[in-house]
Image 1: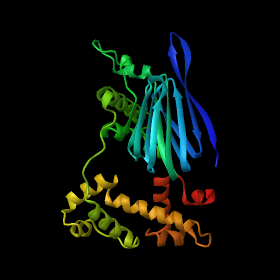
Image 2 (image 1 turned 180 degrees about the horizontal axis):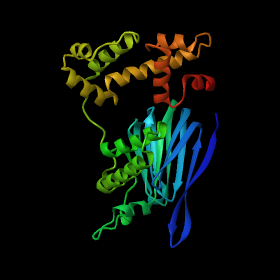
Image 3 (image 1 turned 120 degrees about the vertical axis):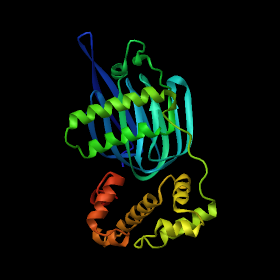
Image 4 (image 1 turned 120 degrees about the horizontal axis):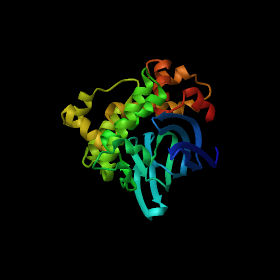
Length: 311
């Protein structure tokens, strides 16, 4: 595994007839980049990274643009974020999919965190000049002050960022028009949210004993799907109330939690080189090797074959 990796990306800004480069430099320590794909959304650059780390690792981004780092898969722990220019820092006990780190233009951010295995995130670089699309007679959006912040991403902003991720993963028809629409939606959410790009983590959830019982039922036999109705009945809740409380406690719906457990089990079985991927898929609760491969790549960012090769 590489201990240090650095790459630069460049956007261009035309001002007064001169093409001025906008730089973004990303440095990772003690993590491995497995895959990187990028796309331009009308001057907003989005890069999708698939990485792997075991233990503490660091990420540093220095950029002329506003930068959003949205976690797409894998949960990190013991996370500390520092924005040196503003002398601002923030600590998070965990960093889940759908959580974001935001760094204002012409600044840097340093992130240290603990990961266990593969994870995926999307980095979105937004030139201050792009906000000019929202200008009107009474308002200059390029002067918008966006403070550094980290935590659960505002729902609408997260939706747009994940739509960008999906477009990178699987481009569809009318791509240029769609990408332009997503860029405009992202800028509007930045304008409307400003100081509220992140929201407080949800409180509440299941009592510890009820959560343990539900998780034990989900883990008991991965090849047999336990229904939400059965899980809810076991802890004396309605299915709707159970799903809400379960997600508040774990950060995942019961279905997604079960999928994550199946993926974790598959990773364990991959260490046994005598087992084929089909055997691993069926033993982990997937109905077929193709379903396993599709689900694994969607969550981990790499195919089962590529993941096993990297072990």
